[in-house]
Image (tube, rainbow, N blue to C red; front, side):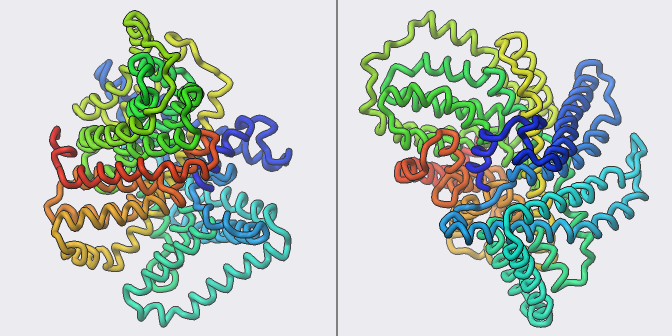
Length: 628
C-alpha cells in the first residue's frame, strides 16, 4: 500500500475498537484488533505520561527520576512491535503498488497472495532466533529497575507470532486455494534454488550482494511486499545462504535499530501532528496567514506554503501536515478558479520542500543512525526549506496570475490583529520546539512530550475544540504509523549491518571517494541516487540503509555532515513526491481527493524549481551550516 492507499483506508475505516472495525464483521478480526490496538494505544499514553513525568521532575522540581527513561525504553520496543502488528492488520505498512496496479486483476490477486506468503515466511523465520535472543537477554538486567532484559525483547517474538497469524489469515482470505498453494510453491522454489546455488553464490564475492540486496529486494518491492519485510527477507536469506553467522544477529540488529531512545520522538511527534489537526491549531494558523496575504493573486498558494512550513515544524509527519492544511484552503482556492490538479501539485511539492523543517522524522532518523547532532540538524534545516519555499512561490505566482480576486477585499488591520491574537497560542508551539532543541534546553523526545501536553491544554481550554471520541483512533493511528516506520528502521539496520560486515561499505567508500569532481561530484551523484531511492523506498528506509555508508564518505571528502544531510533529505523529498513511483504524490492526491492523472503533468514545474533549489543548497554550504 502506498501512503495514498493508506490515507484512503484510514478515511474509509471505522474508528479502532468499534464493531465495524473488523473486516466483514469477522469476530476473530475484531478480537485481534482489540488484542493489539488497545494495548498499543495504551502504550502511547503511558510513554507520554512517563516521559513528561521525567521532564517535569528534572526541569521543574529539580529531582530527576532515575527510572523514567529506562521504563520508557522498555515499553518503547513493545510499542514498536505492537504498532507493526496493527499496521499489518490494517494494511498500512509502506509498500509500492504502482507496478502491480498496471496488471490484470487476476495477476494482482496472485501477487497479493505471493506478498502475503513472503511476509509469513519472514516472520516465521525470526520466531526461533527471537526465542534464542530472549533467552540470552535473561542474564542482562536494567540498572535502575533491575528488570531482566528478556521482558523487553520478548516484544519481538510476540510481535512476530501475531504478525504470522495476520499474514496467514491474509493469505487465506486474499486468494483461492490454487492461488495460495501457487504462492507457497513459488516461495519454496526460490528458497530451494538459493540453497542449491549456495556454492556458486559464495564464490561471487560482492556479486552475491547484488543477488540478495538488489535483485531480491527489488523483486519483493515490485510485487507489493512491504518495504520492511522486503529488507528482512533479503537479510535473512543472505545470512542463511552465504554466511555462517547465527540468525539471532538479525533479531539483535533489529532490536538495536528500533530501541534507540532518540527514536521515541517518532511516535510522539506523530501523535502531536494528529493532535494539532484535531484541536484546531492548524486551522487558526491558516486563518491568520490568509488574512495577511489572501487578497492578492496567488495569495492562498503563499498561505499553503507558509502553513506547510509552520505546521511541519509542529507535527513532523508529512501526511499529517497535508491533511491539516488542505481541507482548510482547497475550497476557497477552487472558488478563485484554481484547478484541482494544480492544487494537489502545489500541495505535493510543498510536502517535498518541508522535509528538512524540524522536527522532521527524517532528520531525527539521520541523527539516530549517523550520530549527527539532532540540534545541529534542526538548526540547519530551516534555511534550505525556505529556499525551496521561495522557489515554489515563484511558480505559484506565475500560475496564479489569473486568479479571480475581484470579490476579495483586504482584511482590515483590526481583523488581522484579532486573528493574530487567536493564532498566537498555535504560533508559539513551533518556535518553542525548535528553540528548546537547538539551544540544548531539552532533547527532541522531551520537547515532543511537552508539545503534546501543550496541544491538549490549548485544545481543551483555549480553542475548546476537542473530540474525545477521536482520541482512541488517533492513538491507534499513532501506533500504526510508528510501528510501520520503526520496523523499517529495524530491518534496514540489520540489512545495513550485513552490508558492512561483507566489506561492501569499505569498497563503497573507496569508489565514492574517487568520483570525478571531488566533493561537488559526490554531491551531484548523491542527489541523483537519493532522488531515486526516495521514490522507490521513501525517505526513512533509504537513509537508514545508506546513511551509515555514505555519511562517512562525505566526512572523508571534507563535506560538513549537516550540509550533506540537507542535500540528501531535499533529494529524497523530491523522489518521495515525484510520480510515477513517489508515494507522497499519491498521498497528496488522496488527501485532496483528486485523480493523480489531473495533477501529474502540473507537478513537474514545481519539482523542477525544487531541483534547482537543491542544487543551490548543495553549492552553497552556508545555507545549511551558516547558523551553526
